[in-house]
Image 1: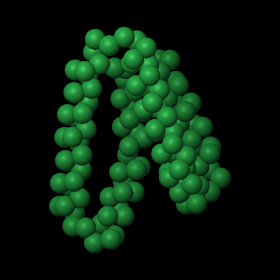
Image 2 (image 1 turned 30 degrees about the horizontal axis):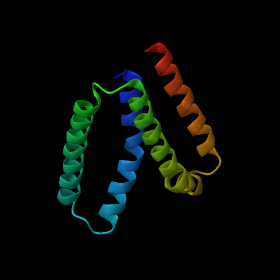
Image 3 (image 1 turned 60 degrees about the horizontal axis):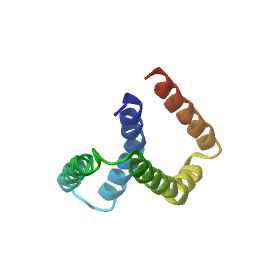
Image 4 (image 1 turned 180 degrees about the vertical axis):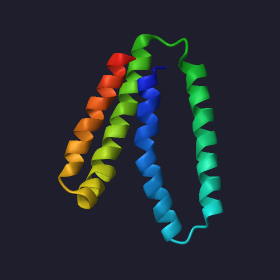
Length: 113
């Protein structure tokens, strides 16, 4: 797994987790409960990643490509349906510029990796 992918996943999840945490705390969740939830999500995600690696490590490139394309489509759907409209409402037209810069940075990291 390349550094570009790991950095992209970390950076892309940071704003969403901060927003979700703020919303949960504002709606009355205790900080300890939010922390436990994020720890559980991290553990389940790690186990799912390990299981995916174990299941697909000997799969053909076509199978891996299909799974990655499906996952990419799911991420794009989430972005288009929830995150981008909310970001535009809160941040205005500069959200598009920030998104473009983000893609440029991701591309640069990929090229340098």
